[in-house]
Length: 343
Length: 272
Ligand SMILES: Nc1ncnc2c1ncn2[C@@H]1O[C@H](COP(=O)(O)OP(=O)(O)OP(=O)(O)O)[C@@H](O)[C@H]1O
Ligand SMILES: [Mg+2]
Image (cartoon, rainbow over the protein chains, first blue to last red):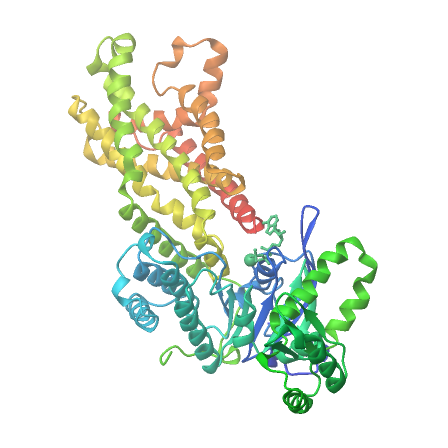
């Protein structure tokens, strides 16, 4: 049993649930994954974020031993996914993007078969299946064929099946795509509870609020590359500061109001005349008090005021929109990438 | 999540190979899955139910008079021949269904589980012996209804049935291989039919070989299907057991499995 060389990492082997360096997967002349590095600390939730076709699923499939990387390496708790796949499989649970359960069987039958495959005895498998169905609120539907399951039920069964062996690392590929808001919130709860019990979760998502809500760290993937990595706050910070938005009651006050904003906040504001809205970046929240007092003194009445924190959406768009431009001028790429990854 | 707890990586005993006993256990679990699927969708047994009935009736009445003078005398020739043809043809379905099954998401889960790589394939093939058994029983039953009384007695009929099922199981590895490497289920069907059709008909299954041209006789004698048919005829009609035909059939089956099982598993593992 060859444990990996400890000197390669500064931390003990079981601190990293996932370590991947330079992962590459090529389909024909399409480089679906183009040198992805990932490091996931055990006991955390790690979000992999990216637009359609970014290479999220392909990356997960390589980490889960379902696909062989063309280059690079990956280790799960220190075990190499290519050299020791059977060990890695004993440490992971995988819930794929598309339901990985047997459509023609019932929920109970599915769980019993997976339990038996994982080495549980007949009675033990039955008990485990009942237990998980109960846990995921599927007991009533247990005997029905999956054909009549809703998307949410299928997802939950899928996750339940991944938990039979109580794996320390769980891959969830878009766990809430296609779920209604309530079911999504339930899924989030489940994922949080999983991590509380000591598991590590690596999930992919296209929903920024999901990553925002769940993930301790995030990697943004675009066209097979990690274009940004860090905590949610770090990523938001990399895009910019919060912005102040003001709408004045009378359009005739617009110009005066704008002058004041520029003066007090010391920045150049932007005006959108149709909406009658002034937007200015707000580096120091304290200055807003001054601004409001000045506006009151000048008898300029506000219709609306709001502070816009940079959302992960902006991070996402900033980084991946750049990706689109990149296609035209590849030269800028490295420069910008550095800027974002050094958060 | 009260009772869902995680066993930490450090407390697990991990090994990177699967033992033989685990492979067997996993394969039987996968076979159990196959049986559950058959129970859930009994319509997939349509072919093994109707093909034996219709083919036995059809061929007996078409060829009976021409080959043996009358239908009754033809039965000892046609029943074993038709049995082999029908059951072996049934094994094509194994490959087709495997292809369809492998395209489903559940195979991703099988691949991500720490189970023997051969289990999903071996299990599917094992479960399909149920199909062969149905076809075998129905063919003999049709023969019995039409007046066939094999001289070898019930025991030899059972043995012959088992021989055909074992050989069909072996042959199904060939189609499983096509199933794994092919892109679509219909192409598996196409290729398999193309191979099996000449093999089953260019044999001694339906007509005496000496009525054929010389060059064809050479092929028919070399054809393993002919040997299997002869072995079955010997067993059920004359209680002969252990002739060269039986040996050739069993050795042939063993060679097919030894060749195609590893090939199929390797292709299955590469196709990820
Ligand atoms: N088996 C395959 N054969 C050929 N190309 C593939 C294969 N799997 C994925 N691709 C291609 O690789 C690229 C990345 O796909 P991938 O499924 O990893 O993206 P994704 O980030 O998961 O996207 P989505 O959000 O739509 O699920 C895509 O361009 C896709 O067309
Ligand atoms: Mg995907």
